[in-house]
Image (cartoon, helix red, strand yellow):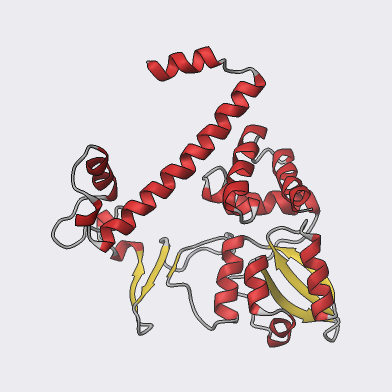
Length: 271
């Protein structure tokens, strides 16, 4: 039953020309391998951004878009949905209306009717679905259920894009273990880190890519790496595994459609 739900979202995105059939096939291959919601997979693969996907789903379903960045906490609504269930399903109870008879529920996948039915049964209320992004739902759960702010936050889709940032810059916040804010803006970060470069470990250690190259070429054994270097190396290896699965799915599709022959593929790989 889950496959039609995933395809329904994919069909909406194709109809809105957010993605094409080839991109959908690649995203579905990634989804089948790693799970999660298809819209999140598409965002993580860099095929489309979250706000574009949300707008396409709203247009395709006729449902309302809701930004969760500044919603008021509604204890009654939160009590209707268990936090663990909300995290598992990627949903957020926004508010109660009609004297508690109607629950406004934010979802990134409104085609997930099984989850809607479960919420209706658990809350004993009518459910009105509104559309929100996966990341902003995660942030709303953290804020309103857990009473916490994300450790690192940027201007995601949970903030209304029509409202300008007060600082005129991309917002960026890092807090320490005591909850004290130590960085507020990207401009406060060292240039190399603001550009997305990983900070070097003490002692001038090489990047994860350099470490991987050294190991593949028969250099330093993994036993000599620090825990931090091993963690970074594992992240690189995981990304490479994901990329190889996506590439394999693309090649299979090209061969299946006759857009590429095995002879041409072999010739390209030898060149």
